[in-house]
Length: 176
Image 1 (cartoon, rainbow, N blue to C red):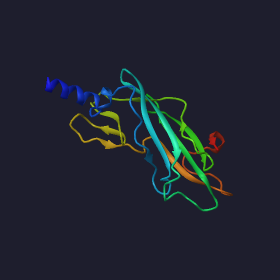
Image 2: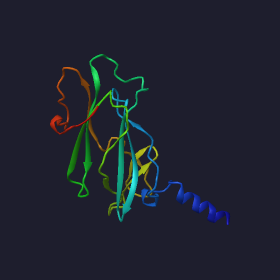
Image 3: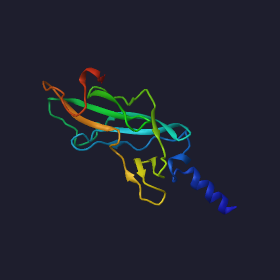
Image 4: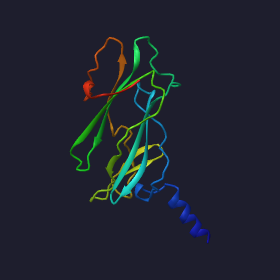
């Protein structure tokens, strides 16, 4: 009986690869961007799984308590280019955001993000509490994919154009 209980606890605790994760899982921890964008945060949640594809929800926010947040009078917020790899693993769909400091809510990206979970060579992608990981096979140490979707970010500065990475301002969703 104790062995059965231990097995049940292990399978329900999320310690195994993503394909054993309950589709009613909780969001990951808030993940921060690289300095100087540490106040910009994102988190993920598995919404459903169909075969080898997981469908994830993503949320964005500004952490106003972050001490490295730009407080210069010219700083208005953050711009972000978010890249969603397509199931063919070749194409990427880009989403562009301008998140102003006046926006105090958590923004939920409306579309689910489809992602292959395993590959013919035995490698796997998985979501853990501290973000996405990739493992070459069942015996390898998973590699952190924290910036897997993040293509580029920048500060929105009053009077300065937004020209960085793959960001296209005319396609940006503005959150104010």
